[in-house]
Image (cartoon, rainbow, N blue to C red; front, top):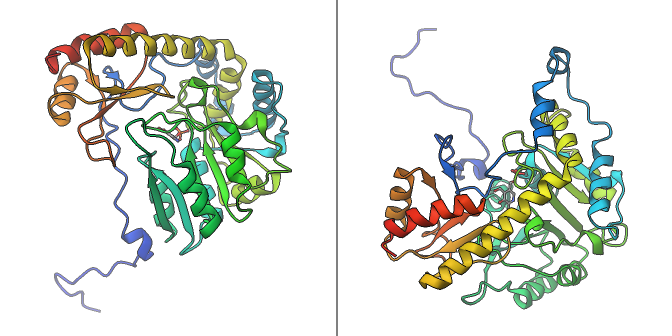
Length: 371
Ligand SMILES: Cc1ncc(COP(=O)(O)O)c(C=O)c1O
């Protein structure tokens, strides 16, 4: 058959929900060598044990598919060591290619067309696209007042009335740092057995208020807790995270992932990172000290800010946030502009690293914003 010149290329059509999605475009390129205070990562890197184990990876290890045995048990052991009240077993742990993949898998497994996803606003940006991909309805309730209080009463009412399929709680919340007590989370789980309550605890190390010590997943099967080795352990590039919940629920969520989605490098590094908890603890302590230092500095100079849970804070510069972002970048410091987020007009989000890094940030910011 003669090919028509300039013929219209008729592509297979994607699902409508996917066609309507805006691609997630995190500004992730060209960040090496800069002071990265934009993604709440560990700013000094992982434990030396992690580096050593990765350097020693053999050719054989690279050429075979990953093996996961013992990792779930190690996660359980670590969590129990951190808090003896934690009462979980390895069948209640799922291993994912980062918590991002766990979130996506939860939505894939539970979120049906027209189901409701309830969450708060502003919050971590990946929940909404995961819901949209499945054609779910989304209800995002704003944090309350100038302290960004969790809209507890409103959320409870909506659960009791609408029984959403998924409730996403980011605790502490990124970017407002809002904290919700374990008791309140348990209260929420009791409102509807039809609602899967997903608690994203990516930054719990900085607050210590995990719900895990308060849960028996056999009695509270509609709760999933997410943990990652990206932030405190410094393994963000390797992509490894965990979902912890009732074994039946974890089994369901695991059905929608590929058999080898988590790679061997991540598994090897995870074992070493979990072994070296003291390294993680000392990094967390350093961040908490740096948080106090910067908080006191803001008070002294009367800078409008909001610091609560997490290794990050919000700051309202006097000048335009976009310009501040650009000027800081020219000085080698990356931050996130939050100007367009609900209730965060005029703000930037800055990750907290070491005291030295915060001092560098502050001395540059002072010049940029003429403090
Ligand atoms: C609240 C929250 N959840 C999940 C993630 C993704 O974590 P991971 O690197 O384990 O995919 C992030 C990353 O910034 C986050 O801030």
